[in-house]
Amino acid sequence: MDAARLRAIIFDFNGVIADDESPHLLTFQQALQEDGLTLTKEDYYGAYLGMDERNCATALMESITATRDPVRIRRILERKAALFRDYTATHKPQLFPGVVKLVKRAGERYRLAIASGGTREQIELALRDTPIEKDFAVIVSSEDTSIGKPDPAVYRVTLHRINRFEPR
Image (cartoon, rainbow, N blue to C red):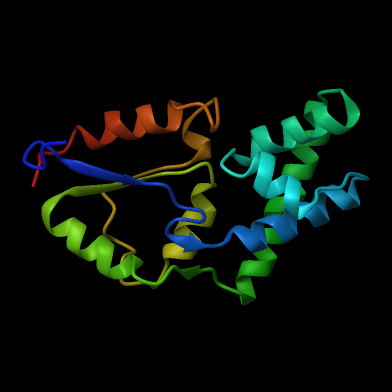
């Protein structure tokens, strides 16, 4: 790629900028367990990592029960969100080592964006009070698309929004 033509850099968030995959797994496991389902660490990292929570819960339920129950999925996701919110109230996700330096240096030359399968609340919480909190021109989360990862919709929306800005 010609660096002179590069105008923006799009980052994933969970497990790339924020070291938050372990609390996501733990709170997802708890929400599922409370609803009579199980999720192993191996299955999460092997089959579901990279999906947004909605697709993850749907795929997991289909694999275990061979059904798709939107009411149950919504209940699990709402409980998982509450558990994650409670957990992160006392255990704020940390940024990976080197992320601040990378984002600051990249931001000097390029517009920066986040395209994530996580929720806006989770992203904003993890960025709050960090040196890179204001460095992203665009943040696109799972709420901004009707189809979650691994579908590329989140990246298309991010590209559309970041292209509204003049290059640096």
